[in-house]
Length: 386
Ligand SMILES: *[C@@H]1O[C@H](CO)[C@@H](O)[C@H](O)[C@H]1NC(C)=O
Ligand SMILES: *[C@@H]1O[C@H](CO)[C@@H](O)[C@H](O)[C@H]1NC(C)=O
Ligand SMILES: *[C@@H]1O[C@H](CO)[C@@H](O)[C@H](O)[C@H]1NC(C)=O
Ligand SMILES: *[C@@H]1O[C@H](CO)[C@@H](O)[C@H](O)[C@H]1NC(C)=O
Image 1 (tube, helix red, strand yellow):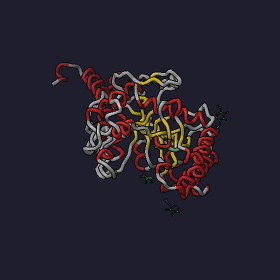
Image 2 (cartoon, protein in one colour):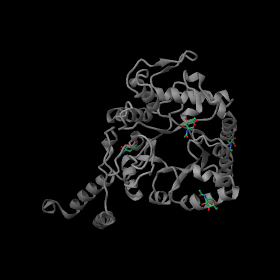
Image 3 (cartoon, helix red, strand yellow):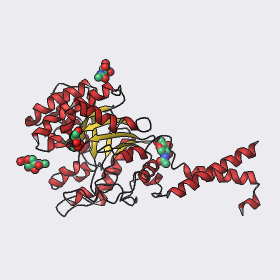
Image 4 (cartoon, helix red, strand yellow):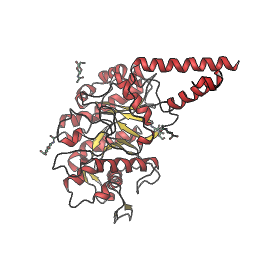
């Protein structure tokens, strides 16, 4: 019908404009500054190629994996997404052998690098939270071997090496200026921090103000942990004012590192988040609170805020997590940290929806015919312009 009221060429220009407008939601120029953890302990998640569409539509350009899933790395080839990939705790024993570390990099990293950006490898996860002293002893040698393998392959400037810690490696976290590492872990942490400093890497911490609230809901101010308006707390040693718990936790880690004599190591949040559902004794695990925590956090990340102690260093955060993961063990909250349900619908609206098309799940043939149509239209317009 439209062609009746337009010349052929203006119709096609209109159509092209229309198609480009639609496809603009898939082709982003520049991304949001937060990262997201893409965990896969579930039996109902969409395929990595569909997830790649979701991620692009969210404008997210940084993803953290817990492994080096080749399907994911492949699905994101030629995208502008940068990956943190991981070696699991179960891999550390092998990584204490330099030749196995080298082989691992050759088999799991090298083949993807020409198409997919990988800028960090995490070695193990929350190793000091496992009670497994052999694992703790294996951590630093594994990190050194993986790092040396990267050096041998000329990749050490492109890919950094670190390990995410649980927040309970601190013995004290308040006031932030008195943050310190647990004495019983010092024998492991001191040389680890020294190594991180030597290789110019950063310190990854998983920080969940939710745990502090859940454990003590009558004492901890919910607004303080949710980044909502509140009086905040003043650190008596520095006079710095904290209006939220996450920033206080980050500065406590900076203080603990400083106590060991290191001043230039960046602290980054490898995980933080809030569950939208929990067991009856998991106070605060609600959709409303999860929406406030993650929504307020994303706003602060977009504003490139630093903490009171490091105001010029924008907080660097990987939100946990992309999806609810139905096979995670533990309390109900563990399976409900996702921003999305496995079907791609959002668990709550945190403004990402502003630019989040409903999860489009095109079949391959739809994508092909869509691309085909764009090609034809472009061709016809070019033809028309001569
Ligand atoms: C460790 O290495 C051995 C032999 O190289 C391999 O068979 C085994 O699967 C590896 N272990 C893990 C957890 O990958
Ligand atoms: C480690 O040991 C402590 C004290 O024995 C215990 O409370 C905790 O649950 C253990 N953690 C794990 C992950 O096994
Ligand atoms: C770390 O950074 C310093 C200063 O930027 C540089 O001189 C040094 O070579 C770097 N070390 C490594 C291992 O990259
Ligand atoms: C993606 O991010 C860029 C830069 O921050 C912004 O201009 C653009 O509007 C965003 N697009 C979507 C669909 O969110």
